[in-house]
Image (cartoon, rainbow, N blue to C red; front, side):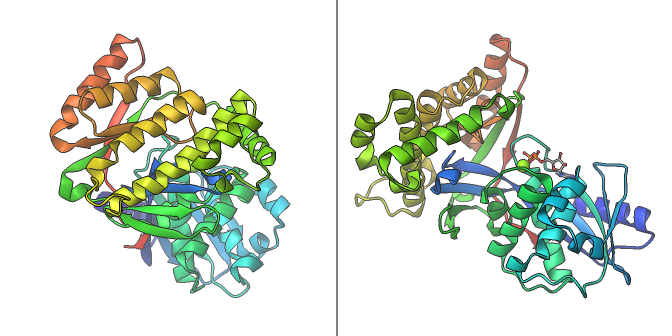
Length: 402
Ligand code: ADP
Ligand code: MG
């Protein structure tokens, strides 16, 4: 973290010829539980991680935005007047590549819904560096959006609250970048608190922090990146969304948020087998998020029932089985990672993210960490899979001025 901040100051100075006026940063995230529940207006439970994107900011006395990143050689420039004049269609067309994440945030801050009036704000110089791996399912996109959103909100004194800044990041990604993503990643990045998860209701967009208790229990989250690329292009993701919509319509509800576990027998009667299993995943996954939150908070239904992070392993395991068998979005590499991690002593494990590749997470006691890592590596090698990239993440504070 300190290193990246130093790198940003050095890089900024090299590009712009003077030191930045301030540094802001925001983390990537991991989703602990709650998969494919977001677009069904249900619940998710991500946490901010100890990998961050840092942005150095300098004020200009004109109306130009100039943006650079260690990820790219180019310096991208646009005037605030030209940016503010872009319609959503223009923004989608004219902003492109990595800088669309940054300029998209500046553009979104000017939208009426955010009270944005960029007519009088000064131009800025931005320099960005990050240790959030790109495309590993840790949401480097939300990290860059959230760091920039918090920075611009501060320097331009816009007075937006963090939940609004999360929506700014989402708007940038949906409109300027053109990726139809939800609000989870930006919420985790902006609302995260050390050793806490962010319990997000995707219908009300209300977020609450929930203590994880991992630090005290000596538990870490091991990310096992299988390196298998998600192929959303093959339509798996869209097909799952369509099945959820079909299921909700057949059940006579607006979204699967309004279907509970008690309604599943009726769903089984109404729906064909595949649609039923898609619905069953979403409905039981929502319940697992609620149960995980209750277990972490120690407010279980029975007095004296186990609580805290040691008690959520079975919920993680059940989440994985549901995605493997009912939602059918796992791949053999993810199943192997989960199975071997649990056999080698993990408290619980599940694939995380949209599926069809990407990473699994395992909740592991520090004492068992190397055993789990070695077991996973060996199993991948025995199965002829390429070696996974495994690393530990810790639940960390969200976006901040540094
Ligand atoms: P992820 O799962 O990491 O969020 P995405 O495809 O959603 O993957 O976002 C990654 C993209 O975000 C990169 O290809 C790049 O365009 C942009 N990005 C992320 N971090 C940075 C950075 N530090 N500098 C420049 N662009 C970045
Ligand atoms: Mg992303």
